[in-house]
Length: 546
Image 1 (cartoon, one colour):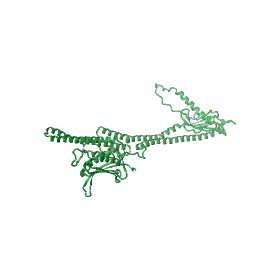
Image 2 (image 1 turned 90 degrees about the horizontal axis):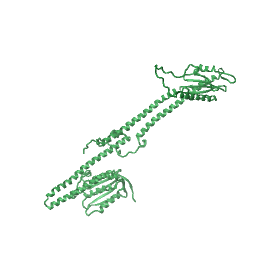
Image 3 (image 1 turned 135 degrees about the vertical axis):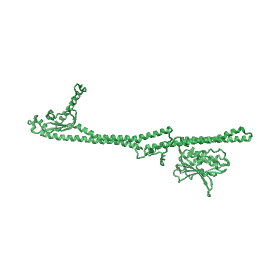
Image 4 (image 1 turned 45 degrees about the horizontal axis):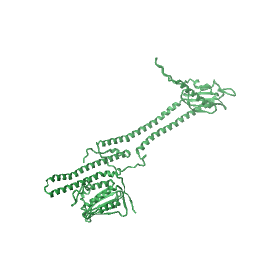
């Protein structure tokens, strides 16, 4: 039957792909994409972490190296300042307030450094900024045109600046006081200008007596930290690039495919297509590929079911029209009948067509409810030996004279167990037995055999139904399973078979993961001696009953 809309078919799935996939142990939490996302995020964090650690160590090393340099310079100057040339007074020497500042002036003090000398009372004796031509501070801004409004000074700025200067002086005083106790001091603090400085304070000793403290400051800490931040930028940029790359990969490999699947699902919903087919996504070996293959399989299954429903509706319409046409013709002819014999003949024909129509409607109703019944009933372990024994016993108990006998041959010792639904499976065996009885001669024998077939490891549980009828034409060994196919033996009442029994049996068997086939039995000379229907089912296990 031609479809109104085209169905794009993808390449068939490899064997076993129609089964649910179990998460691989190689995946993070069963997810390839989850592992990729986690790895990218951890990588970006690792880059920042390593960069921060590396730069922190570098910063600490620079500051410690700066402190060691200042300590070496301060100790050198302190040794010179302890000389008698720069001290006065015996036996309690003090700094020579005239010569000591000259030492700070005559010795080279690098730019960005400041040297200060304090006496034993912590009072400032000399300051390199005061005895040199170096003037600290910043360049003045360019002059503004006349008439420009004055710059508004933030309220409270002056008081805050004074407080900052006072805190800086207190920190310096504490450092000097600690150095006067005889221990060299080194650390980071704020200067009066608000800049961070590396500061060392060395006690100046004359023999063992402390004369005062020499403090050296290096004000290039901010420049060092700025260089550190500039060095951190490459790490930050690399981390940003990794995050952007991860976002791009998420968009390309997750967001866009999901959007495409959503659009394809909308196409199916709007009936512009009957199945989802995205071969490029189905070839992926991650969750998106699993989702695409599952959606394709689902929509193809729904499409096949819709096609089957359409074909079933067309077949039903055709089959029902035949008895209805016969009934209408008989009713139209009935008023024209003159003799009672002809009237009885037409009445018998009407009754036969009504029975045929009733049988058709009953079988059609059973077939239409089959999918719903299979979906509602949960599979459970079924003992085929017990099931077939009960079915055959019912037939034998209700057998009338002249009807074929039913014989059951169970397996030797073992009870064969399958996973399924006893109601539908019982219907399969009843349909096959009814079919065999209808083709068997009066007083004949229908044999039901249950066995294990070691040559079929996937479906070892085999049930065979044999009859002694005329057999099946070779060209119809597959056709007999089609809906409404009937090939009535002579003597069978017309309309007694709807042609749905074998079709229903195949539908139930395939729903249980099994297979059903038909073949002819032959004797040693090759002559057909009957038909055989064989059902193969996967086992739930083998158990021996005591």
